[in-house]
Image (cartoon, rainbow, N blue to C red):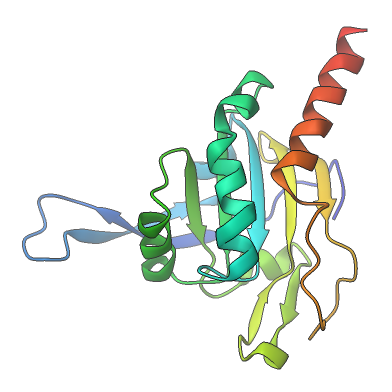
Length: 182
């Protein structure tokens, strides 16, 4: 993946809160497409190996959540966190993280991740197929900047983190803005 590439067209199966649904689980299914998330917006998309996992829950997701205002100041309309997890898991993770600024996208079957070339086997951890960790600045559905952790491969023995961190992406946005202004 690289700058200039259009995101793949995928339909995501999401669960959204709907107060008209009776019972203890007031959610309904809602299909959302790549265009629903990315058309007409400049966003940060970051993807990670799994909801509730240590690096994702301790550093990456909270960093983007807490830095949202800084990203907005650099022209970002939304921040999306994607994982190869179903909507039930992603919604529960968002709730447990008390997210207000970052929206989660469930790539339950890994279709988007596969089409991005980022689907890897994590059988060594008992995960099955998951996303390699990356981030991207996406403008109207086209990758503007790409941040991929090194070592992309199946069953990697480590979980590299740094290239796709909120700090790295924000620094890039600030540098790019300064270069345009100069």
